[in-house]
Image (spheres, rainbow, N blue to C red):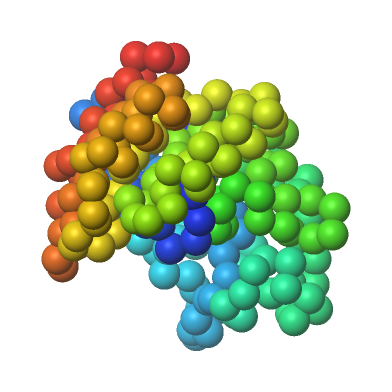
Amino acid sequence: MFFVTGTDTDVGKTLIGAGLLLAARKYSDTCFGVKPVAVGCETTPDGLRNEDALDLMQASSVKLDYDEANPVAFKHPAAPHIAVQLAGGTIDLEFLVKHCQTLAEKYPGFMLVEGAGGWRVPLNERQFISDLPVRLKMPVILVVAMRLGCISHSILTVESIRRDGLEIAGWVANSVSEEMPYHGENLLMLEKKIKAPLLGCVPFIENVSAESVATHLNPGILFTSK
């Protein structure tokens, strides 16, 4: 069980997560992704549905029910602590912990749990999304958006993850735009500072898909390091 986080929102966590699920099928017959908390969901006849959760389900070898893949969903495209207030509800961390534990026991294999936004996103006034992987002692996969500011964002995120007592199992450099000045120099500095396995360097891909991303990822280290 691994937790996928990013240096910020809109860094490609879902795309990288889905690519990892596809690439990991070389190593495990059971590969699936979970989005415990999702915002910006669409109202459908079957209930609220989130695009990220659906993408993870599509890339999974285990066919989860939607409520398994995304147990907590909100319509408003806002930070979780705001979306839950607008919906008049609450987010129960204990429920999320038990939900992930139940899925890990039900489907032993390669399980990815995708966060919401960056590492320290509030769920309410007391708790953060990072409390979920901390409670479950999940190794973390960090998605770095290769753009201006990525070095500082990455170092701060890495420091926070390690201060919380968790291992960084690996990281992915994801090119979110066609051109980044001094891409190679930035990548070299990130490799020096993150000090965790680089699982892949994904170039900018037009008409990108999980399948195209998977060809640039090597999740093998996640299995050999167990």
